[in-house]
Length: 109
Image 1: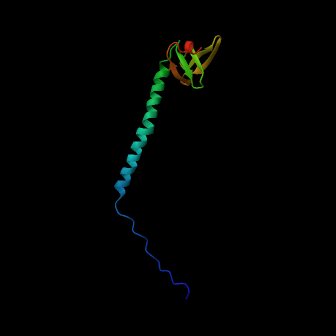
Image 2: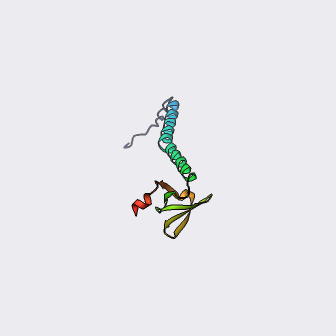
Image 3: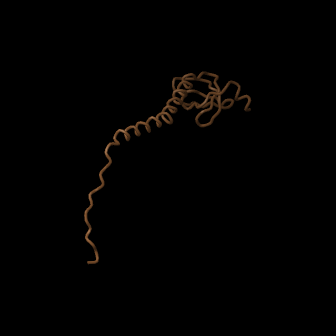
């Protein structure tokens, strides 16, 4: 006989215990994810909401599209931004990305 018969082997026994360790590992990974990703994003969103709620006429802003201008009118959901003499665009409030210090536009021109 050229081929010897194969004998079935019993599967290796699964290690006992380890349930608590794996659960602690999952909780630790979630904690790291929360502190490195979720919490900073929530903080940034809160700061942006505060900034958008505090927009006033005369503020110099940069929009999400990169347009630099001065707010001429503020409504509940929209702001009107003057980007050049005689040119105004109407944007949603949350499209304002940054409020600049007063006089920034004059120093750029």
